[in-house]
Image (cartoon, rainbow, N blue to C red; front, side, top):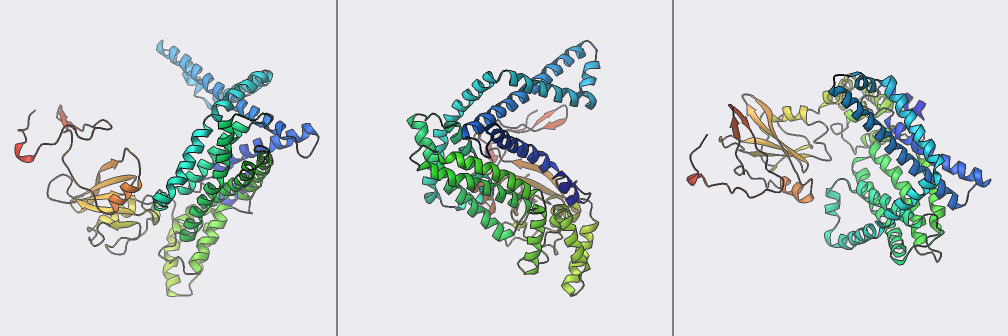
Length: 502
């Protein structure tokens, strides 16, 4: 897997993500595969009794967590000791712990020692595991109730607020993943049936996993149908596939006369599914870069994506060697006038060394799809589009276009440009013949569908500041109001404002 990850990047991994995904997935594969093999080996059967899978997996998981905490505590103690020596001018220890030749062996040695110590005290680890599972299991009624309330409210709220988050698939799959963990915390090895509240909460949660997975699949389908495949959507599809495996077995278990017994076979099958899906993703079988590039080129050849909409930045920097091969094929196509025009842009893309070098060009003063004037009939100020074209690459995309509003922010009679979305807003002012950023607005309450709709509709007003700036030793400093302060002090009207004071 590591060999293929390096070969697919073709020597360029700075903007293609590099092998970081493999660094994360390989340990997961080893952990899952190891316990499938060890449990079966101890049982001398192809498949072990479920109790053995549970004991090994959750005990070793608890060991890993304890070893990580122990290693962190070791470095905290070492750092504190080094700080003590620094107080008296001895810096040797602080310099030592910052050396890689010391830090790496020390970390690995302490981590290994922690694993060994927890092996010698496996009974204590099992006790800690049991306590942790009991605490987790009592979160199940709350999560099941919240998920049930979500589906009760969904018909009244509709799907639009869900789609407006632009993260529906991620949130829904995360909720399903949490339910999987909590259900297993309540079920444990299946030997003992928990009390009525936990038992019925597990059944409700198991039933709700199916509509969660179905809704996530629908959300993902809409994005893929509208914009095509990307590596992130392929990874989401992989996670969704595993989630469906869990959802099917858990739904069957919810109605089983033997309380959640089918969950055991579902967990084992899902463990094998994790291994198969990961091997497919990090091999030529289902390489996300290859599949995404092929799909984007298919949409382009079918006329679904116009030459202006073809994402050359993605092909150059996120499509690995497959994207670069597709660009070379486009550059070699001189069959039509349109192909020759695109060929020039492709040559520029191939010669680029960083994504910001491929900021999409504006046609005159009219913005492309990733910027939208509010109201739409307002003309784009001269020169603003060229500036935004350079600085908003990757932030104002076709999927998430930014709104541009003209407002007089500082009361000088000249409009500034407010550029942003429901996440953040930048303020640009004209300085001579150029536009430059003069401020940023962060939304403390986070993004909401209502905030996004207000910005799109132009519902943005300029009001006096709640608290004025201070001038200290000739330097002007701004005062940031505390969170939640919305109406103090009430701004005075202009006609009864007091005279300025020092």
